[in-house]
Length: 106
Image 1 (cartoon, rainbow, N blue to C red):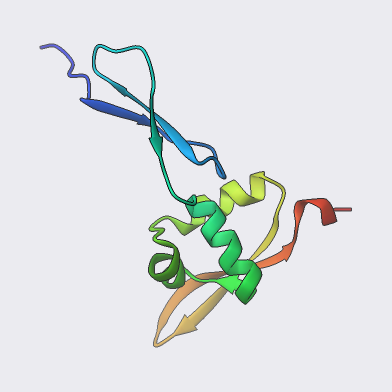
Image 2 (tube, rainbow, N blue to C red):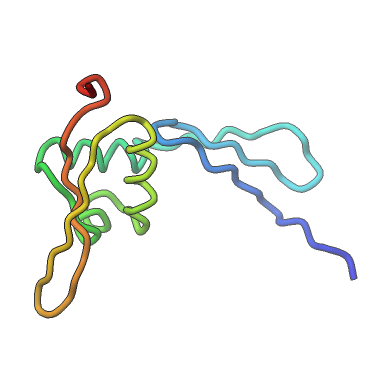
């Protein structure tokens, strides 16, 4: 049995990039897919304006289902983000608090 190649293999851009590269089966050249503002930038702007963000807020205002992955991208970019656990109506969830920008590191 032969392995199937996906029709459209999308390489995810690093946090903050505005374009992604997609390659169709049988083609070696990349096709640029324009995107609006990246999820990382939307999440960062929300945190700068509100101080923190929860997964529900990220989904509602930023369109991000995987907030923890985007937070890791921001941490890798040098942002200092603290994780706190909150409980509401018997449900525990993470809240991410922006503590510092990359140029503020000691």
